[in-house]
Image 1 (cartoon, rainbow, N blue to C red):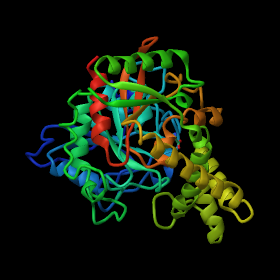
Image 2: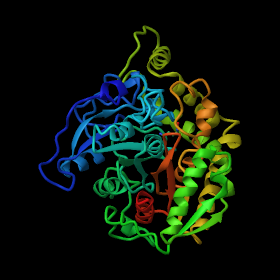
Image 3: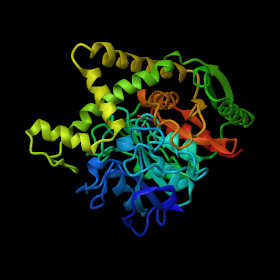
Image 4: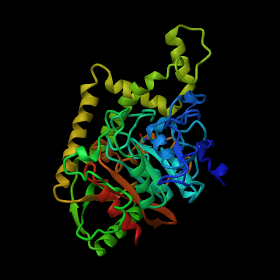
Length: 432
Ligand code: GLN
């Protein structure tokens, strides 16, 4: 089964300690997270032969907690995609319907959980890549607050936006994995302890927060994140929110006018950072090197021509353009202004509500091949997930139900470092 779905790029076991909170649990790790001695490709030919000399902090934390890593999960090349079809190792199929995509970019991770091949998985979420595949495969995915989980050993795509996050079959299991990987890391200066953060609970217990108690919770429902979404998705998500109200939550319509610009701002910032982060793949230090007898520039160009796929090249070009002299103010600076506006909008909303609820994805899972020729259509599918990355906020996708036999995800976004409220509300959705 797993061979047909193309879940893994590399199947190799990394044993964990004998005991610990995750003893006996198996984990799929997205292939952009470094594993010492085990090939780590980012879904790219560029890193086909790359074997990292060290492991990411999250990998060490998982194995220290007793988990066994069973393989490196398939992904969109360097995390750039929404379907896992841009992988140089072929697409992953959705276990719910193998003619459809599993979402992306952490498609192998979510599909491995949904197929029952592993208990848990790690993905990375730059603009939705944990939540999107969780929604499309009918499992749970958490995008932590920026700085809660170490990025040490995560091969960067857009470092100001991304976080590693857990994927599991239930909210409680995903939260238990978050308990293990969260917390400051001396190797990542952007990490913070929730105890250092004003208003946050100093000693969070994420698994214990999955208690299903939403009595008295206020849920904001932003009209902008429902406008234009597939009707079947909207209906399923509205039913789930009504169920939370029946359990004692209060729901209130809110407005987040800035989010209409989130996708545009996200793609300018993400591609700008990518153009810089991916400059290191030059054929000298890592992975692939073209057989070129030209000068350095020619060899660099030949290596990148061969090593990168079409989507990665498109984004490096877009990002280089957005940062170039004369266009920097027009694109990059504008995008940063929009990012600040998104942050302010959420801050204002959280003065009145505890969490913000919406569809995770505005569409049902695409059929294989459907979105490949139409990058713009693929980018627009990230409309609801990118705001949480721009604002660095915690977010979760939890199954809300099905439409036409396909999974629909409900997204909940919370205030900075308040993953407990997000987890609590999501666990109530599961109780329907
Ligand atoms: N789909 C988005 C993109 O292609 C998000 C990817 C991600 O979160 N890594 O950039």
